[in-house]
Length: 159
Length: 176
Image (cartoon, rainbow over all chains, first blue to last red; front, side, top):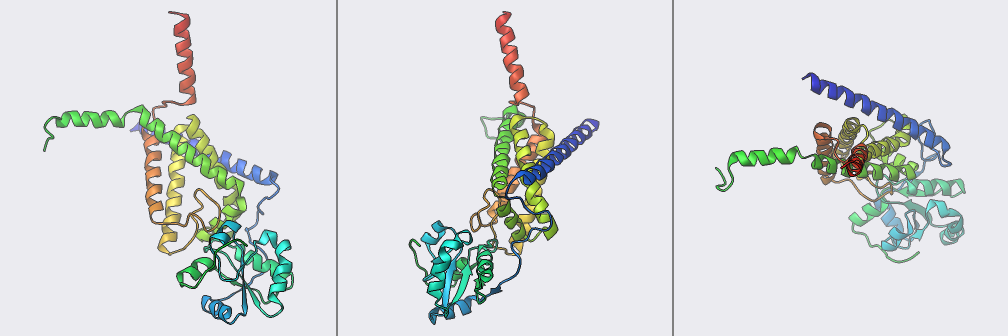
């Protein structure tokens, strides 16, 4: 038995050593990188946006009152997107903003969406639009998956 | 019930031989090392993507998200490098099994709660790699490998082993 406990002791000490080194390296790398994470509680963005229910989004779309904005990558967009959606990832908003404004024509409500509970690109996009003065923007959270599950029609093709 | 041509004693001996083979532990170690190195590097490349994954799990309180997203990937990478090179094998394999245990709990909790989230295991892109029950099996298998390395590794195929091997064969050549 003493042999086993000695082995265990060394293992735990080594594991602790690796952890301390790893944590130190992680903090150092974070300090050096340009896109570093903030120390205090990671937040997506400041502010919040209202969500729209799937039912209301569908109804609004049928009445032609809703313009969907797809915040996902272009590959996912080509594979399939909500009807008449505009491809608009948040980091390329500068290019797509005039187009969105034109399409909205002051009448339609922009609804941003992404895919998956973990994807916050929809929220990011909506917040960015809000900061540019589109106060009626809404988010359809986990939009793509839920839209598909509901069996509503989708479109395919390039932006 | 004996299998006829193979006696029970022989079978046992064979199993013992296979289990105690230094090659198995070496293969497991290198496999785990490569996996940890890869998984860690992917996350180091996209820290905010990984932070989002962590938030989606809803396990960690918000103040710990940043520090976990900063440090977990480098711990993974270091563990992977140690396993690959065969340095501090016992400790790194123990740490690997501990990490896999934590991942198991996080996965299990999320699956029970029915969260539809990305695993964040080998990719930080949202919407990919959505968690499934089969991921638990994968996790358990990796953990079993790590524990096997902790208990049965015989330092075969480590860097130190190879250096010693090269030196030994050289000295035999020079001094026949």
